[in-house]
Image (cartoon, rainbow, N blue to C red):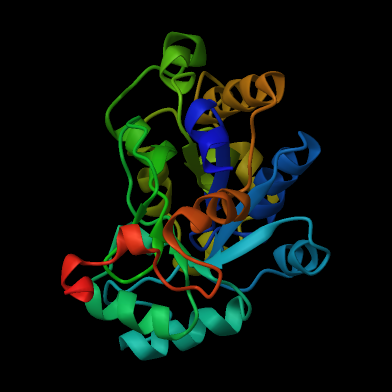
Length: 268
């Protein structure tokens, strides 16, 4: 099964919620659902809309802990993990805010039952999933909207389409606010955040989003073209499906590492 993904140009869509307002979450997530795209969301906080979708099995969910202090999720690693597990109680996958994690965090999450993560971000580099030192399977991100904007790459999908058609699994990561605002350049969203309170940002309405939405070419236009490409290619998998396809190559039926993955000293 892993071989199928290795030979294909499969795309996998994920979304970091990043404290977006309920209106922004609904605007972004509903687009992917209507397009028939399987989506995995990484949650920073509770959302009634997401809870309903998760409960109905319409989307998959993982936690999105922020271990960078000050964090609204807690003051210690343990507090933050407990907070996030209260948001998404039953999950095996995580991605950290700002990609920040250290060995201790991985070990604590592994002890809580986490078995895979998508916590490494590349810049359009199709790195295959690998077995992390923690024992989890790491599934790197190929495209992130924020990184793409930061590097001022083309907002016309056709100009980079060839990068998305090379063999190998490619994880896409988008953010509701970037999508809802149609961010045209990296600092656009930052400029808006600097002029509103945290509370106003967290409860921004559809009317307010519409007023702030960039009307020219932006990252939402690029993302829509990418989704159209994915739908036409019919090579889309969920993050959970990707994990389940790769897991047998790393683990045996009892969840232990296969012999090919064990350190040589274990056989001495």
